[in-house]
Structure formats: C-alpha cells, structure tokens
Length: 294
Image (cartoon, rainbow, N blue to C red; front, side, top):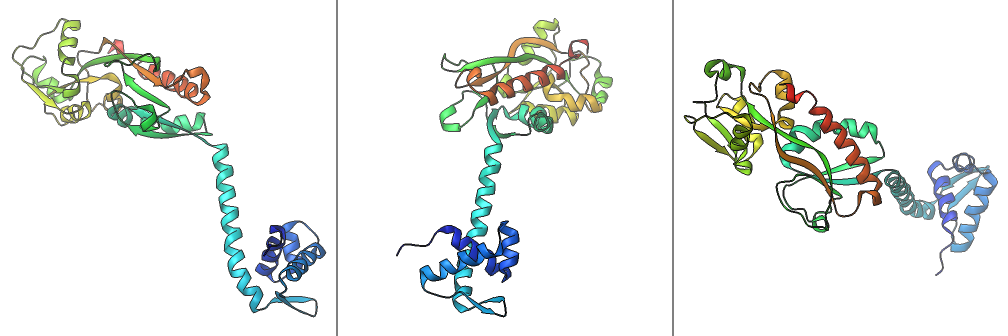
C-alpha cells in the first residue's frame, strides 16, 4: 500500500490535536479550507473517516483517535529531532586533550571565558598526558608540555614557556625562612624539577628530605596542608597564590620547557583549532604576566 503524503498526516495531526480546522490552520499559517481539504484527501486515500462532522464542528472518532495516537508522538519526535540537528549545525565541538592538572587547575576555571568569546564552539575535554593518538582519542587538539618526542606528523604551536618554583604556606616559610631542612615535595612525573630550579637559582638544600607524590596537583595539595614545600608550575597555583593560601618565597624560573598545542593537521586547515590556539595562548601568557617579579 502506498501511503498518502506526509503533509496530509501533518495537517490531520494538527487538526486532531485541537479538534478544530480553524485552530490547526492558525498553527500551520494556512486557511482552514486547506486543512479541511488535506484531511479529506487523507480520509479518501485510506478509505476511513477520521472525524465526525457535526454543526460545522469536528470530533475525532475511534479511527481518528487510533491514528492520532501514532502520528501525535511521531511529529513531536520529528520536530524535536530537527530542532536538535539545527542546534548542532550552529554549534561546533572541539575535542581538547589536556594534561590533568593543567585541565583541573587552569583550563576548566577559564572555560566560561572561552564560551563567551566563542559561543558557537563547544569544548569537550579529555584529561590525558604524553603521546596523543588523535585517531583513537578523537581529539582535535592537545595541550602538552614538550617533555616528550612527537614526530613530523604532529603539528605544534607554542603556547607559552614553563615557569617553576617552590611554593608553601606562609606559616611554613615563617617557621623555616630557608629551603634547607624543609620537606621537598616533588611529582613523580617531574622528578628533576627541583634539581632544575636549584641549578637555575643557585640554591641548595642538602639537609632536606624529598617526598614523592604521583602528580603536581597532589604536591600542591600537600604543600597547602603544611606538609612541606612543593616544586610547582606557576600556572598550577594561580588561585592559591591570589588567595594567599600559598606563597612563592623564592620566585619562579623558566626551566627551558614550554607548553604547546598539538594537532593532527596544520592549524590553518582548522578554524576551530586556530581559534582555540589563539585563545589559550592569550590566556596563558596573561596568567604568567608578573611571575618573574615574584
């Protein structure tokens, strides 16, 4: 059996919803005569009357009610799906892979600013570090520090330089006034960070015990709890420094590494990747302004 045109079912559904050709016509922006004709054509095509017509009024009969129980939800779902597709076509998603501590402590708090600047571009965030498999992860870009090798198939843009330095609570520093003798907290992901900073700063702490934590975030949390002094990235303690929960008594030094944005293809070929690189570069560099003076 060949079904009548979808328009006839649509007009019937609107009339059935209100049991009025006039009200259906207003919703459809057509004349009530057009609605009446479409419904009559549907009835003729299927060989079944769907309304009782009395005194210029219409009432669903059993057959019409049975059909409306099917077409009503169908058109509601169709309208909902089309609206969702239209929203998706207006909103593009960029999948960003980011090192977990940077994502937690720096990127996520700034995402509202990104959304305000790029309302049509939604960020989907993946917490990950190290090598990036863009195909398997589905990432469009990845924020990474350049502490590992990537080959020529990966396209990279520098975001900013890395600054590192010791941080602790004001009370801890008031108690010791020097690094030597304080517990030195370090992340297993950057075991050489203390040595790098001491070499750059010409500082030593021969009587200090090194205490290892899995990640920078845990080191900073331990420092905030008064368990020692953490070697931290300046980007990862922005809020704690502003609030005074932590201080950087000996300042930060550039350790020679940098943060980069990686992508599987040139940035000029992806407007959304280029937009994110421009935004994240401006934000990170703004975050680091004045760090050298600490």
